[in-house]
Length: 242
Image (cartoon, rainbow, N blue to C red; front, side):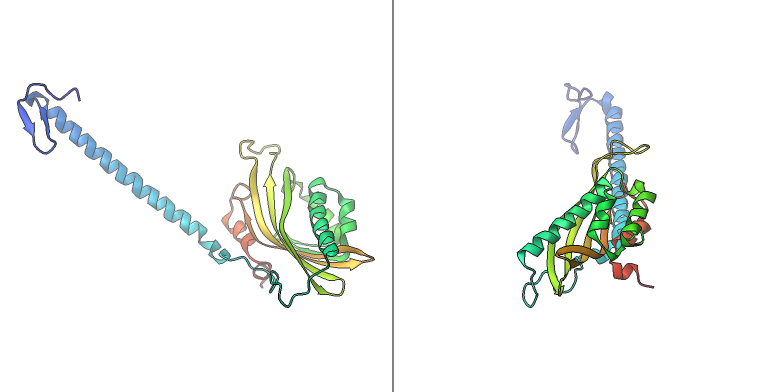
């Protein structure tokens, strides 16, 4: 330090350095400055801890989502009727085709893939039939524009003659910003959820009879509303409880 004198006049035993008497005032000022820094650091740490606690409180509504809820015995192999390999492949194929139809707005594909009595239970709303789905897409393009949807861990089982149940994880990616959206935010993972499908084989072809979305984690970029995001995180049973 430039304030430390080469002429040994006084020794400060606490700090083990030699200073000239004329620089004692400067040294005291340095100590006071260091103490001020220490106090400032304490304030910063305390503030950071407060922010962490606040974040923990914000996450509290999602504590019920520690484990994934699936249909009973969905992933077990004992005592479960497995579908023939050909049917498993066909079901996985149409699961992917339906998401591709959504992303490309191929509404005719909806009519081909969905049974006449199809019902979809989504946190947004319940949709009935292919025309109900199409109507929702046309009225709410902002929910789908710039997004792509992906199915993972597709698992199936037989639940009756020519009937099946299928479960998969859905990941929704926001890839392209639309007008008025922050271009620096994209791409990002917009959401993740559990999707349960029921299907029926008609004239040799599998079609969807129902689809249920639940336990969906959606990004704050998609919706900063905590109550809204909490609703998406519920199971369909919890969400529809009256």
